[in-house]
Length: 182
Image (cartoon, rainbow, N blue to C red; front, side):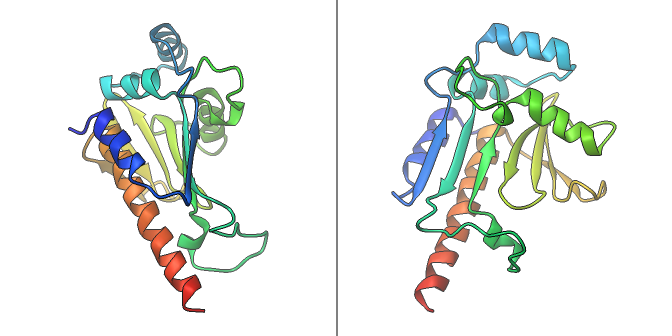
C-alpha cells in the first residue's frame, strides 16, 4: 500500500501549472476524527485517519489561466470540465470553507440518496464522479443518479489519490496539446 510520503512525492512532481491548497497547517486531530465517526456512524480506516491528521483537506486544480473554466451552458466533452478535484475532510483550520468538510459533503450526499456509500471524501470538478470511504472500503460513484454505476477501488486512500493525480495530469496534457494545435 502507498504511503503519505509517496503520495506527497507524486504531488510535488506536478508542474507550476497546478495549484494544491488545503488545511495542511491545521489538519484534523484524533479527537475530532473520533467525534465525527461517533456522530456520523462511519468508520475510517487507518490510512484515511492518517490522511486527515496529516493533510485535513486538499484541493488540486490546474490554474485558471492555463485551463479555462467552463461557463454555464458550455457544451464540450465531459473530461474538459475536470480541471481539478477536491479531497474533503476534517480540519482544525477555522478558515477551511464549510463546503470542504465531511459534515457538509455528507449532507449533500443525503440530499439525493437515503443511504450513502460512506463518507464522500472526493469529487472531481464538473461531473458526478465521487468517491466514498467507510470501513476500509473506497467506493467510486461515476454518476450520483445511477446506483448501478459504482465500483470498489482496490487500494488505500493514497493509491486512490495518486491515480487521480495521474488522471488529472493526463487530461491536462491532452488539454494543453489540443489548445496548442488550434
